[in-house]
Image (cartoon, rainbow, N blue to C red; front, side):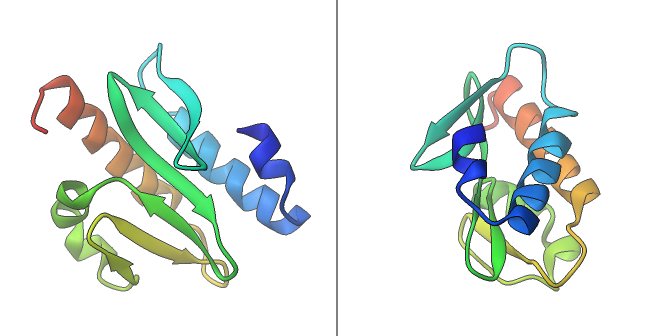
Length: 113
C-alpha cells in the first residue's frame, strides 16, 4: 500500500495517508491491508473498502449498500453504484469515511452481505 501511495505527488500522498489512517482507526484487529483491483484495500473476512487517487479526487469504494445507507451524508458528492468521489479541493470527510467503514465491518461480521 505504501508503494502505491509513494507514486503520487506529495500533496496527494498526504491525503491518501489521512484516508488510510482514518480507515485503520476503525477496522478490527486482524484486518489486512492489501492491494486489490490495483487499489489499496482493507480486508476483514472479505473486502471492506478500497480507495484510490485520481486526477481530481479520491475514489472511495465501499459498495452500493453502504452508499445507500449513507446517501443523505453523501448527497453533495458525485458517485456511481458502489463508489463515491471526494474532490481534492474540499476537506476530506474523514469522519464520514470512518462511519462508512464501520458500517462495512458490521455488514461483514453480521453477514449482511
